[in-house]
Length: 143
Image (tube, rainbow, N blue to C red):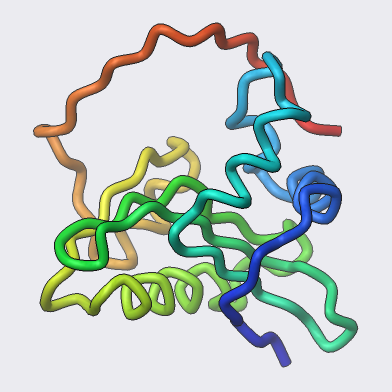
């Protein structure tokens, strides 16, 4: 039985989790070890999906104003646990925590491989999103 809870995740546990998901390739190498703790401390919504042994098998991090918007920065599921509804449960819990689907619009940047999952949730591609990005970005995968 998987349970989804609102919980701050420790950096070491999150880095280990990233190794078991496709999220491990979405971060730049630059200052990775220093930035992950800030990410985990600052997320307005921090959800963990845990199995019977309390192992982290899913996570969602988001930034929200709790009135209109939720930007999901991270949504991942352990590769051994995909297709069990964990991602859907995390997204539903995040939307509810932010204020509910009648008040909150959800945005995220999707990995191309994840687009079918988000489309199954009823999400659509947006063409009104702007970007400002001047950061260094050396691609790597957390291993």
